[in-house]
Length: 486
Image (cartoon, rainbow, N blue to C red):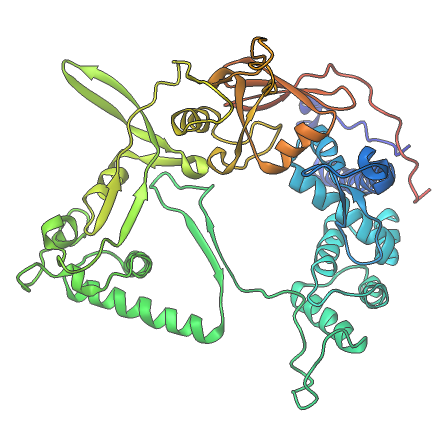
């Protein structure tokens, strides 16, 4: 069993000298690395306990949607029973997707990158760095054979895993060429190489919203596209300034990017008569942007959105007074009331307002099918998939009968045990819906929107609007796995 450090308490840390603090920091980091290496070993052994043969239906017949064997690492690694990732993830307090990635990295390292695996357990390479290499070799395009992966392993292990993303890309490209894994053009430049994966992407970090109502955008595009985008943003920022905008350059470039997203041009900044637009000295916004009458009538709506916004409100006489901040359901994002008003006033914007649904009023329907009004109620109440630590938005989930609907009850004159009503329905993403239907996982609704889950090994969790809470009592836990370092 790996030994744990009995470090000083918070009060004792305050009395340590600078040298003592440095030593404690070093020892704490070493303990963290050892624990991360042990977790990889646990993940690999968990996969060993759940081979395809462990699936109950494997030797009989396959029911649509039931568990199947799944490759979660590169060629040459063992297949794993699909549903096993969920229980490991819930115990670790992570999503099933994150648990699947952890197990995949462990299998990739143990079976295809054995030198790096050994260095992790010897304490020479931190687990996070080895997992970064495993992520690349798993998702290489074309796929790396076992021999090609071993080549990468030998090269990375020679430098104790200290290799950056660019060098790793070149190393994988060399392995692809060395083992003829792609049909390359003989006349092509031999230095072109192959990237392990197409690096182009556009990521909008809409889960991390600034209080000002902005989000961060990250992208990697083709060089030519990047230069074109730079030129378009520079032109848009210059046009805004020429039309009277007093915003700083960075803000005008950001605004120009929004204009591109709405297929708008600088023409929208002109008034309907073609005169010079006025500027708003307070916010630097051009007045022509704010007035719906300024937009050209022959242009289509540039933005059409459905807003699911939630604000606290109070009555002042006959007037509803809304709070300054609320929540946008899409992405569970912070939303400012002023931002919502600006969206509604912006030119060429079509806003659909949906009626308010009282979540305190139970809704029911005859039969098995779920009508839209009940589906909407469940999506608003649950927000995300109700499986422990899952964060998939409820609007993209299935609506599940918590107590199974009995299709034969009415014909046989029995009461329906699983009626189609909001207090018997929960939002489940497709994976966790299948998990609940075809495995030993069980859950019940203890109150509207509050679910208690029980895993096949008896671990219990409560899932509500505030997140997931483990209900298991504290216990000493299983015995540790002997460290390969010893």
